[in-house]
Image (spheres, rainbow, N blue to C red):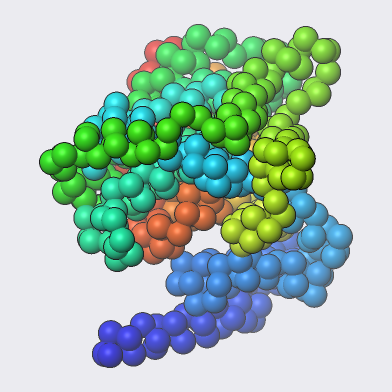
Length: 485
């Protein structure tokens, strides 16, 4: 009872603190600070972050604050504030969720999960390691978001398989395993993308900017000389921190588990008609994600993108029949009652806040401050990396690179150094957002599983952000200098 009262008091304080910080920003921050509307954007950001971290109100409701407050405060027009909630990435989420629902409905995810466990074993850390390697490798070549989408239903089914039959309450070890597995899938989907130029959008944006500003093309192989070691080091350190330091699960080999898995596979029997058709759509969608660029080159235009591929796969689940005579399809609309609608609003709110921060000139102010650094060296690189990591927590990593990298190019020109030596660390750090669901799409996807509390992600994110800053700084002063110096 006492603990319940403490939690209630904390929620009340957090509930009041959000608007109180907002009001304080409106009153005490100078109105000509950065730009005329900057103090309003900072106030909304303070309110949102407070409620997101403490979960004083439902997280999707907090995400709608910019939709209401930005037009009211004159930061944006209503049409401008609403547009991020219909961003293409929102529909990428929706399409991925629909595909995942079909996998679950027809138990295909359970079949895949059983086979993964049979290969990786049933120790908690071993399973998490297996998922980390698979997710990280996939995200080297296809969208981080698409990778997380594909791995989420499989990971969730693994968690359900390891729970005792008929028990709804999880032990501490099982909770830590579920939490660690979900965090690892989300984080590995972002970190694996660092390994290649095509692995994550910020890398491609940086390559385009470098070509535009200097007529220099990044070589795929040279990038991998830096990206692969950095990605592997970050993945292994993240696995160590999550499974050994923050959330140890202590789950060992369970006696008779192999026999249990074999029996469950036998119970599933051969692939049913519905499973086969879901598998075909799932495979075609994955292939289109993987072969997106070659297919676009083949037809001579950008016909395919992550979003229309995902939505095509999701829509096919409602169109492809299981039994045409009875008008039975792979998914019915009633199945969408289980769709994580809240996560769509969450990401829309994050995009809207990011746009407000950009329009207010807060990013530009930071760039000018950094430009005041007088010499090139470890301190300047550290400041750039730290800025990239912190900003990636509250804004789109693509927008961060698009806005911040040109500023960094200016700093490099002023110092007379190769722009890659400064801009590549910023680009790598832009994908390091571990603290909040809004930081990266993979974070938001795994957060939708229900196994991650906001405070757990913040707790893990702080430590992982610090570790990532140290690793990227070390790589920037050694590998990047060796390859591009």
